[in-house]
Image 1 (cartoon, rainbow, N blue to C red):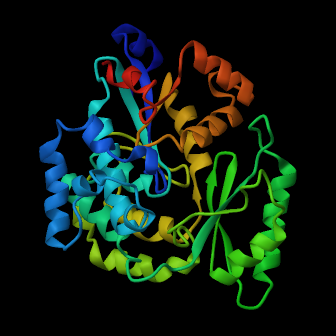
Image 2 (image 1 turned 30 degrees about the horizontal axis):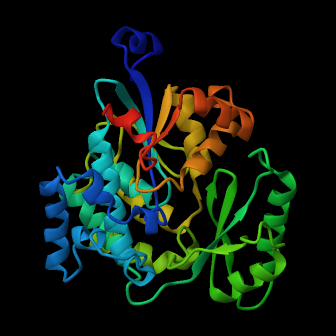
Length: 356
């Protein structure tokens, strides 16, 4: 790992790279692969050859649709591979003359992408893991997810909202036939997972905010909850440990655990990836906190497609007062001067990462 002084000597910026999860390829992102990655035909074709063998629509074809379709673009068997293709291709475009990538992390499905970024999964292994796990509920979703704010207007943790969410989860689980869990700690938001009865009851108990929340996440199963025990079992059986390799870059997982290149136990990595993080809460906020404190990045690069993860990343940086940010206003003003949070899905910020 490079020290700060060595960064100054090379003239490069230390960069933490963050991979997005589901829900980041929306109407505005249609055509993302064609727009930015027409030079990566071999990489995209390898993904599509794998999917064709399974009778699935190629990601290039999904990206080239004339109109965005919730029915076509949001199911896991399509969204996962499409998002992976976009994010991995973005990673390839980061200007290595300007940036030293010191670590990678990701949110939810972004953990699978982070494994690919770090080389813990090769290209074939990455699409096999991502496509397999993304297709596990193609015959029917198990449960669902909803999102609710856990912050104030300054993008700082609101203890009252935290207590409210914890209380609602406890109350819902006391009711017969209801299951509700914390799924993801997502910066200033909490993602909840549950069965239909549990989610419906949570919608009754949680006060309506901003005419948006609580918000159901369309075509999302009950990820990172005990409801996916069977999915975890099937994933472990379908995807052998031999797909995994020691990473070339440090990786920070959804517990804040660091997997280093020279000390990664592949059996444990396999078990965490296909068991623990499937059925237990994914703490993206903790992953970010550990990543910035452990690797001291000069900037954070969020891969595309889209920029839905930009807010939660900024909120975790504010919570840790990284870059001196203590509020939403601090973040906004600093970003206008010289962005330290660089979203490759943002056309205005993309050239900073690519050097174009």
